[in-house]
Length: 381
Length: 243
Ligand SMILES: Nc1ncnc2c1ncn2[C@@H]1O[C@H](COP(=O)(O)OP(=O)(O)OP(=O)(O)O)[C@@H](O)[C@H]1O
Ligand SMILES: [Mg+2]
Image (tube, rainbow over all chains, first blue to last red; front, side, top):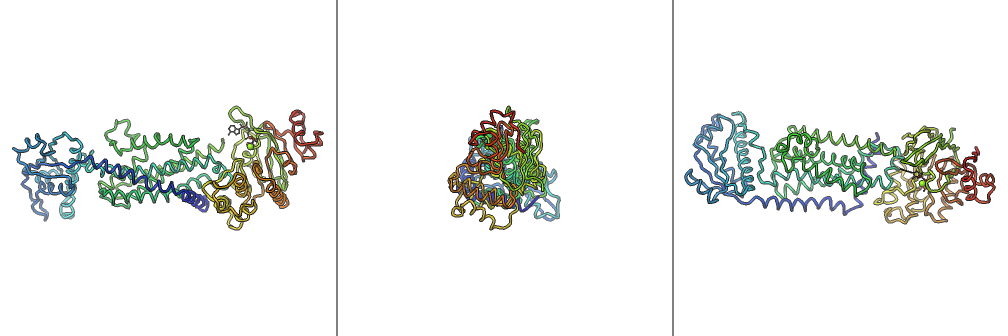
């Protein structure tokens, strides 16, 4: 293994792409265009909603130095800060049904008298929400907001009392299970991953295919460079562009589209980078099966679209038929999506998403080795 | 010193095509050996087998005394494929420098020398995509020569090259021979074959006859190489090799 030769390949790959400004522009601009359109469409689905609150919570003494807390009130307040699309109106049990029927409110949330006390006792929040229901999008949206409000309220409390009381736990299935707050917040993490994956995959598979159709690959095989050195050189050369693209996509999503993120951007970026490396190697691997650029394009529905569908980006893996779920976990993209969502939505740190990160790295290594193998087998041709 | 090249009873089948039928060949060092034969004779397949790009069904190849395929010895071998295998987006200089670097060339002057050798010094910064067909061919040749190999395999190197440059190339090949470098050149241009020290007539994956141009003409009793080739082709089975 010669790092010199790997370096020369990487540098050549970079020089080649640098000589093609149109492709570079496409790499960088297209994701922004698509993200903007998708962002507008996804956001537009979430219309302003009105929530009726029946506030009967009498609060409780949380003890341990924080004293008296009214979780019902805190949650209600938190809901209006979480989203400016929500209008809160206070209802009485008597007026609630009528308000719902007349669609004055999209949903009614009841905080019963012992709400705070029950939460303290059970260490779980059970919310009683009645949806108007004619707009499932709004219902879904509200559900997300309630979730987030609950998380923020409890997180706020546990920060104050970090030492004093054990963390309040919430029924996990209820917290995350299909909880879409702003739909874009929910979809943005996989979107970020999809772009990097798609572009890097197409770019590498076409470049590597060209290497074969023009005969330069054969020429390389008559130099001392090994297949593994070649594939790693490719990976490094393309990572530079993947890096630039990841940065732009991430920056645009966070700062222009203002998608929320809870965890560290550094971890998000790391996952992106690993995903890109994996995509480079997958691209090389699949290009070894293609005879023409047309065939590479045919691989996109197979490799990219199928993977996107199965990756849990739009359809939760837990909602898939049982036999399909293991298949979904065999998709490298699934691990990237999961890691990106956990970090961006749930605020997980690197240690918590380590299994996904390791899986991605494992796929990247696997495809390097597989590519090196398939190149050799074809050399025999 | 071992021979530059030994090919021993090499067989290669492709789907339905018997490209090499137990072909054997011996090339001593410091000469230019011409592989002559019609389209589909098996010249390219033979060259690729010598390089280890094609794995023969049976038989063996020793290049510079080393049994192929062998990565390490490739550094001492130069190869110019029949199709100009270059990076179109890169400049002449970038292409030559890239292949030079992979073969372990550290002296940047060697890259310039190779480019000058093929008279592309004025186009060194042009992208390959912008070159004429013959210029591409020359760039491809520069890539094959840049690391100063001891054994050079050129698959139809002079196709599309103008007469003046062709003369220049052959002069250079001569100089390489004098330095002990061995060249193996495939061609179907007979007048070019005259310039080779030794010729091998290849047809349907076998060596019909072998020898210098004048020897072959004499043995066939024909005034031209073309006619000599046809003579050996017709009497294929009975043609014995001249060692
Ligand atoms: N990869 C391959 N797959 C199938 N058949 C092949 C392959 N490579 C060569 N052949 C066949 O082997 C035979 C010899 O081909 P080869 O390319 O060696 O001929 P050649 O002497 O170089 O011809 P030319 O002068 O046209 O370059 C031909 O019949 C060709 O069709
Ligand atoms: Mg040929």
